[in-house]
Length: 91
Picture 1 (cartoon, rainbow, N blue to C red):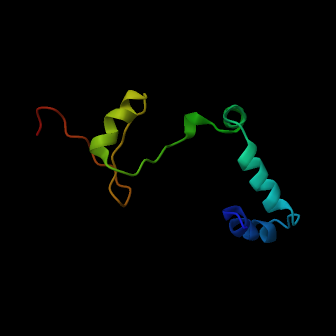
Picture 2 (picture 1 turned 90 degrees about the vertical axis):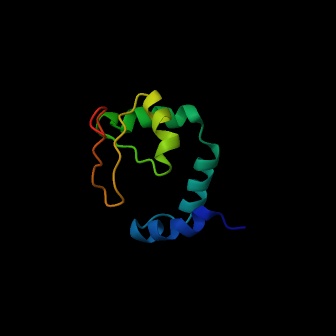
């Protein structure tokens, strides 16, 4: 049975001239990696000072939850233009 990784991996195999076992190795890593290993790699390679998280969904039900996590929340239009927040008293 083919995994979703096999289909997606073909382009990478060709593009990067990878070994034919690349897809199977990738699937094995994904299936067996632990949360701790992912967190260690993220701390090593991701610069969170320069990272943006894009959340798509119902702003009304998610905005306060994101703010509670300590994130700055910026609303944007479908084209990516920033929607300025309405200031209290200026409605």
